[in-house]
Every structure is written in structure tokens, then in C-alpha cells.
Length: 194
Image (cartoon, rainbow, N blue to C red; front, side, top):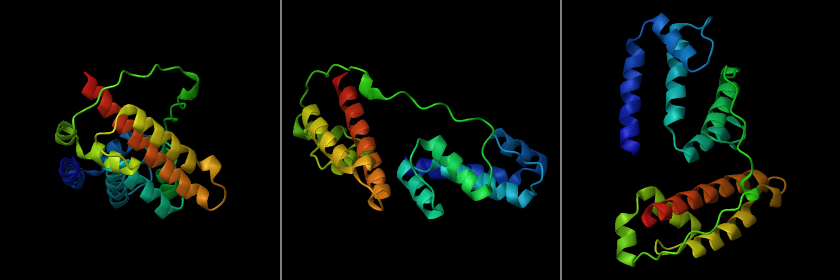
């Protein structure tokens, strides 16, 4: 949860403040960055920022990208690498993993249908999944066919290639939100089948 993540950040920040300069350099190099010429204050500041970026939810991480004027497309590691490059002028040593091949070439048979009674759906849904239903504009009682139909419609509407010019970046954000919501809902539905 967000509260647990906040506690984890506070604890780690306290530990950072207690470390000596060699310990801070080891921690900085542990995330794949060079610490040779940096003073203690800069190391602590950058490690704190990096720690916060790693704990942010994808939507909040994208907001950080927009504040810095960089693209927010990609997974969490790619976004953090872009933020590091923009803010500190360096990239982590490890190259990012190659992107996964497009899924549209793979055939995945549709899962069997399962309808969840209204009361049961609301009682079992984690907050992220409930939020995902709202993002898709669906009730928590929607079945997989309804979710797929709405997702396809919204994905087509907000796909960055369908929106040119100034609208493209906003469309990319909305497209990613819709895709994240769809994945969360479908994952929950798969878990409910078990």
C-alpha cells in the first residue's frame, strides 16, 4: 500500500543520512551509477530522489517526467533511466532489457466466462482494481467480454498513432492508463477464476 511504501522510504532515508561517504558511494554504484567526483550532499540528494522514483506508482512517475519535459512512455526502469539522464546527465551502467515482442502475433484463446454476483464483486476488489474499473467506465460486475469491448474502443480512441500533434502526448498518457487498467482488471478476473 501507499502507507507501507511511505514508511519504507522514510526508513531508507534515515539510513542514508547515517551512512559515511564510502557507504554512500557504494550505494550509488549499487544502482549502476558512477560516484567518483560527487560529494556527500549530492550523493544523499540523488539517492533520495532515486529511492522516491522507485516507490512512485506509474502515474505519479509519469507526472515527474512531464515536469522534466521528457517522454513518459516505457516501463518503470526505462522511465527512471530517462529521469536520471535528464536530471543528472548520466545513464545507469546496465543497458535496459530489450522490449518484449508485440503480443498481437500470439494467439491466446479466450478464458471461460464467469460472472461474479454484485455483492461478491465489491467485497473482493482491491482498491487498484476498483479504480481500474472506473478508468474503463465499467461497473465491477462487468464480465470479460464487456471489459474487452470497452478496452478495444478506448485503446483505439486514445492510441498515440491515431492522435497527431499536440494531442499525441496526452493520448499516450490516456492510452497507458487504459492499458494498465485493462491489465489490472483482467488479472483480477483470472485470479477470481482460480
